[in-house]
Length: 186
Image 1 (cartoon, rainbow, N blue to C red):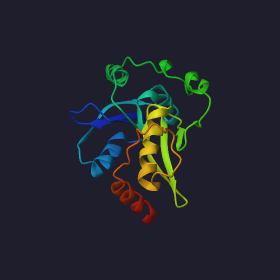
Image 2: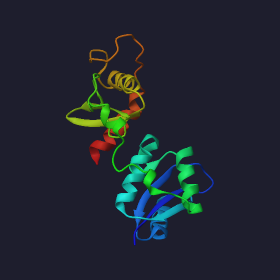
Image 3: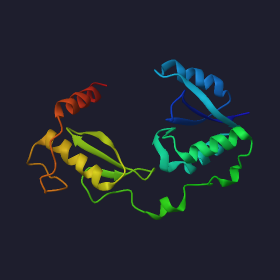
């Protein structure tokens, strides 16, 4: 029988991994092998991939990356309810909340910005036929400003920027170029 588990670093408030496995203890051991910080299972409950997905939907606002989430009061309350045996799965949404779908578009009006499925804005830049992710941001404007900084570092002043107000400061592009070079090699 599969179980949905919550794993986080010992003595820290997050990040927390919400996953599904036949053996949560075995999954903990495999994650612990590569983690520099000791991990612990803070809660687990009977359920399969469908229940795991519903947890992911429920905590979409705290999503960090892949199956990892920022620790929040909502996650803490659910973990406490699971451990107390009082958790009711009927509070979990069956699908993405309608608020997410109502926002509509995944594109942005800014160059180098798009919305991801977690309602965050991804900044990216294309260079020599490759696309490089700059980062994930809470607002469209933050992502556009991050794009501008990297674009100035990569292409210099003649490039098209999102804001012409002179606030974009070129990033120390040596670090970004080293990262981009590593991406090209791999």
